[in-house]
Amino acid sequence: MKAEEIKTVAVVGAGDMGHGIAEVCALGGVDVNLYDVKQEFVDKGMARIRQSLDKQASKQKLDENAAKDAAARIRGFTVLGYALKNADFMIEAAPEKLGLKQEIFREADGAAPPNTILASNTSNMSITRIAEATGRPEKILGIHFFNPVMLMTLVEVIRGEKTSEETMNTCYEFIGRLKNFRGNMVPVRVEKDTPGFIYNRLGAPIGLYMSELHEKGLADPEALDAKVRSVGAPMGPYEIMDFTGLDVNLHGNEYFARTLSPEFEPRSWLKIMVSEGRLGKKTEKGIYEWPGGARPNIDMNKADPDFDVMDIMCLQVNEGTKLLEEGVTGSPAEIDKAVINGGGAAIGPFALTKGMGWDKVAAQCEAISKRLGIEWFMPTRTLKEGKIDI
Image (tube, rainbow, N blue to C red; front, side, top):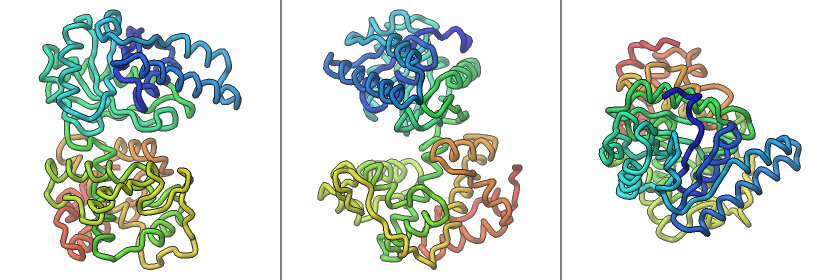
């Protein structure tokens, strides 16, 4: 199947991610069958899509006719078989539970036409394990959108162990047709099914670093965030933790502890805050106070003069070289593209640190590792030998 032959997409799940995925597909000129298990969930998702389109049209950021056309392309379903009957492509956006996803793919495999490509919008589940529930593993892959879908342009296209090259190419080209309020979606190829894929994998050592600094009392969150923001970042790392949810961070660390290294085991401060229901923005209290969901008032005058923001970039580059060594991607430029489009950075970590010299980047990672006693931060052979082509 070629990308231009995809005319109808079935989106499974009408929640936070699903309704956004349905919207970008519709704005890309594709008919959408939006499915969920209850009519009230479908109706809520459809209402959120209309509200989103109307809001952008009222601000003249979207042509009114384009908004109407997009809304008209979406139909709601509560029977998965009916949603898949004429679908060329399925994007599953159900909760992150492997058993649930496998159940959906098993049913979809039996209901969808033979040529239909089946994709999961998982952020960390194994595409290979999901594909095992079907008889078409060559047509199974990951299509990882980022939240909020209508503002984040990055989409990771993830190969499972048996995903065909044709499926990868078709989906990569198809994603480039989709649109959100910032323009066309930007696909990035992930050539190996690995924990965290690219973007979240690069964030893993940063989360570990920040968590350990806080655990040992080596950083004041507000002072560190103020320092990071002082160099142009829209948010500091601790505010980002609160924004995404401390429970999400906890579960992410648990996952990486199982799949990457026990060193990612969640620190005690994080466990305590989650157990107390202090989850960040969603509960209006976490590392910071979020009154009514409003951003915390961070005092920029408290910026920590001793924190080196390049620590973050160096750890990201080191993690990126692990992805290069593992064959997850063959290009530092592709990693930089993921960071720029996934987090709104002006420049990617490889491009930013290249001028330092790879030997200095490696030395900085080693210094962090020895200071905190975390082996995961030690520089890779690729980084130490400077075998990075960018």
